[in-house]
Structures are given as C-alpha cells and as structure tokens.
Image 1 (cartoon, rainbow, N blue to C red):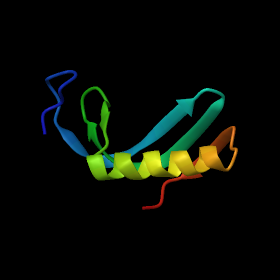
Image 2: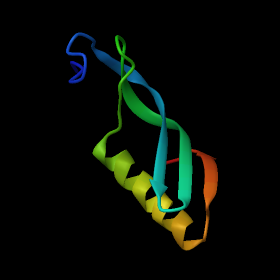
Image 3: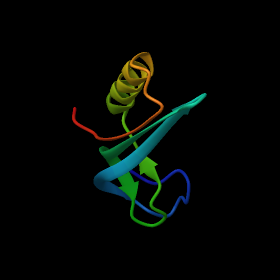
Length: 74
C-alpha cells in the first residue's frame, strides 16, 4: 500500500515496536507484525493485531503492571 504519511513510499511486511501508556503504566510490545514504509519507516498495524494489543494491555493493567516489555505473540 502507499504510505499515507510521506505519500512516496510503499509498505512492506515487517515488524514494529508498539508502546501503550495509560496514567502510570507503560507496556512495550516488540516484534509486532506490521506494514512498514520503505521510505519513511512509518508503521501500520492491522485492526486485529491492534485489538489483541489493547486486550493484552488491559490485562497488564488489571495485574498492576507499571512497566513491562514483551515480545508480541499472537
């Protein structure tokens, strides 16, 4: 797909690091499947993956996590 940010590059399958924060909690997910622009490196995560990340983030909040770094596993 054409990158909506730089409007020049095409995206290719790759991985991203996604950081989610709320109040005092921060959770970092590494190796998240994404489409990455070959020109500007903008990262696009699909809806299904984003929903899974949010679900895992909510579970971390309920467990009382303040800072966590995880490798993404679908």
